[in-house]
Amino acid sequence: MALRNIVLETDPLIRKTSRPVDEITPRIIKLLDDMAETMYFENRGIGIAAPQVGVLRRVFVVDVGDEHGLIEFINPEITYRSGAQVYCEGCLSLPGKSADVERPEVIRIKALDRNGNEFELEADGLLAICICHEYDHLDGILFTDKAIDGVVNVQPQE
Ligand code: ZN
Image 1 (tube, rainbow, N blue to C red):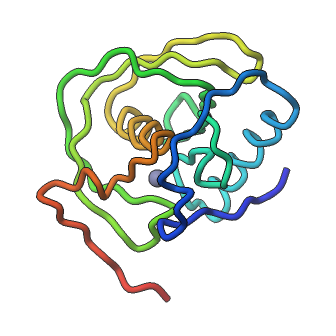
Image 2: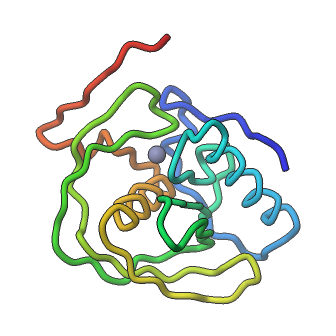
């Protein structure tokens, strides 16, 4: 495994639309492993999407610290959204920035796992928020685009 460099907001790549994975090759498996390692490094994040490490593929991983642990999504599709919740979000690609964003309270998502098997998951609370945030990255959408009243908080960087 290896740490990958995080693509920042200033890089036009972060705004691109990612393509589906046609075949789960060893390269995709390595991508998943590296993304998890990069996400866990110094407890930096609870989710990371492939475009954030410069790979324009429809892949993301999350671990919000609940009983699910690490979940890997390949070619995900959100099939159901219900309710609303507001949470102050941040992003590895936008260090120091945060904003209140409204997301569904409950979602259902289907995707492939690393073995190519389709699974479906129902999520609520923070897991639903995190999945929606990462899913947006696959279409070049950042949480700041959805900031309530356009308010983005900025912390000075060290
Ligand atoms: Zn993000």
